Structures are given as C-alpha cells and as structure tokens.
Length: 224
Image (cartoon, rainbow, N blue to C red; front, side, top):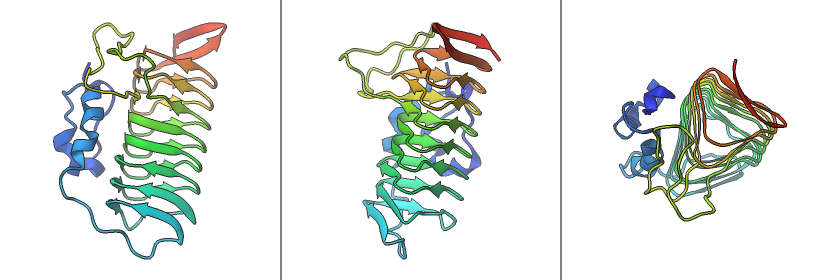
C-alpha cells in the first residue's frame, strides 16, 4: 500500500512535499513528520496573540488563522491558511495543518498531519496519524497511538507491516472519510477514502475505500 491509495498531499502543504511522497508507505509519512520540522521554516513567537494563548517553541501561524481566547500551542507547529483553533485546544508538538482545518475545543493533537478542510469536533484526540483532506472527526473521536506490547504491530490488511521504527502508531485516515462521535481507531488502523466508522465503534485493521464499519453485536464491515 502507498500513501497515494489514501490521500493526495494538497497544494497548501507543498513546503513539506519532499518529506511526504505519494509512492511511500503512509507510515513513512508518520515517521517523517518530525524530520519535516528540521529545516528552518519558522518565524519567532507570533506577536499580538490573545492573552490566554500559551506558545512555546517555534511555530508558524498563517495570518488568517483564527485563535481563541485560550489554547496551548507547543512547537514545532505549522498552522495553515484559514485554520480555526477552538477554545481549550492543545497542540503538543509536530502538528501540521493544511487550509481550512478546525481544531477541536478541548481536543489534543500531537505528531500529526491534517490536510485541507479537516473538521474535528470537541474532545477529539489525534496522535501519530495522517488525516486526509475533507475528513470529519466527530465528538470524542479517538485515534489511539500507544501499543501495549513491545513488538512490531501488524495491520489486518494483507500486505502492510507497520514500520518497526515507529514506537507509537496512530491511524491513517483517507480523504473524505468520516469517524463518528465516540469512535475509537486502535493503533495501526487504516481507513480508505470515503470510508465511514459509525458512532461508538472500536475499530482495528483496514477499512477499504467507500465502506462502513458499524457495530451490530460483532463489528460489521459493508459497502456504502
């Protein structure tokens, strides 16, 4: 599987293109997030921020970004054009957003890429993950990233082994996918383009493009 099977890097994130190749494994993109910040591409601490915004480290905040009265921004960060940060959001390093993203009130984001028009509702948790363009994350959606066993994590897909070098792995969420309220994606989950995880579902493995995961007793995967 290649990153191109799940998403297309938007023009808004062209400055990072050398780190996110379409023919690479999507997990290689996760591994390269930190490397993408190694090149000096940041301004100093932005001026004239709301008094309740805590900024630490190097950040880039596009002039069109809307900031709340209170949030925590721990660099390195790249907040793209027309991004909206809602009250109480915590960005805990190595976070890249494209154009028109909404970062949830009370949400936690760390070591992740959100492409264009990603919407996250309040109390979402996104870590060690790549989120495609147009993705919707419902209230309390969790992309878990901590493995309980010190071994190579393997996807339920046939041919994809998650990179051994990744100590933490979150999720790969393809363009226009939907993760509904209170759903949980276990470490190493892969959602294809336009896929749907219904409310409250705890999902592991690979959900193909244009398919749905719902809970009717046992987990049910079906075409949309």
